Image (cartoon, rainbow, N blue to C red; front, side):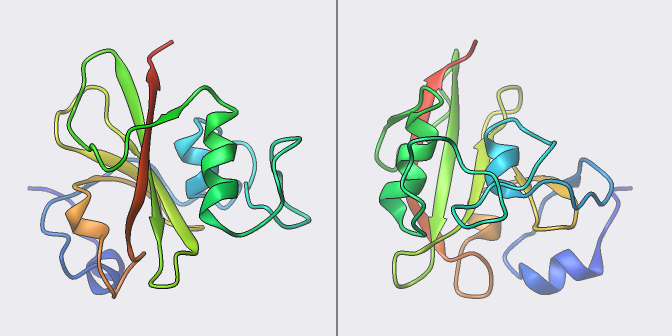
Length: 147
């Protein structure tokens, strides 16, 4: 029987299918996790880490530039699984301000992985964490070839 988490389910009412993938860890956040870094907290405001030469602004352009600096290219809202590629979805609130990032699972078609703030990592669908009660909606998806 799958492990359930009442806190997660209360925050994400559309999340009907998910798997817990890690214990609680407050060293890193969703932006770092989507960049494959579980050692530090990424955000464009001090005292957090932000890639060099990327504007330190909390706007979608800065977050897109952050992932482009890692070799990602925009692919609009194409969330379809593409063998040989890894994808990142950047979520935005109703004002277009970034709130979250998720990375596509490169092994399980249709599933994504997220770090939920200071909480845990989960595997989920994009729809499961989208909407007004959670992180907003996907603003853009980026992809790069798997290294």
